[in-house]
Image (cartoon, rainbow, N blue to C red; front, side, top):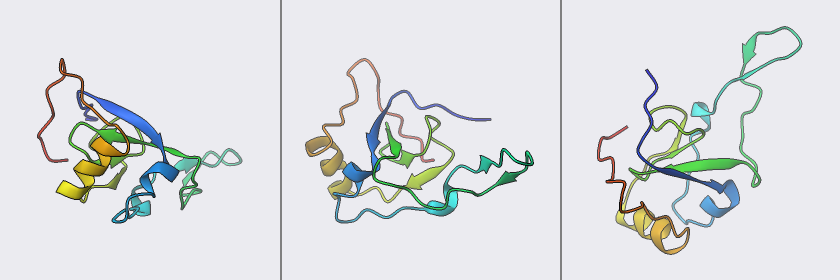
Amino acid sequence: MKKMGRYCKAYSVSKFREFSGWTENVQNLRKETNEGNGNESSIKGQLTDTDYLYVQDNYTVTQGIFFDENVIYDSISSEWVAFCKDTLKFEIPHSQPPNLAKA
């Protein structure tokens, strides 16, 4: 079953690429349906600067709003958390406690 975190926020891939430790787990990109034959295939194998990804409340980065699927980045470190807070201005609203469950 898909799990939603309590909070996430979208940013363009170009913003994530500003982080020196950024890597992209492109194997986890969502598969897209080929309109021609209706079969599911991995049409998109890379991200562009204009694509959007989501920082979850546990600081993982996903392609969609669900924190447990299509995880593109999960190398959580103090440097990454600082980048999210200082550069991206990612802040979990006080009314939403952080989700400490590991994806």
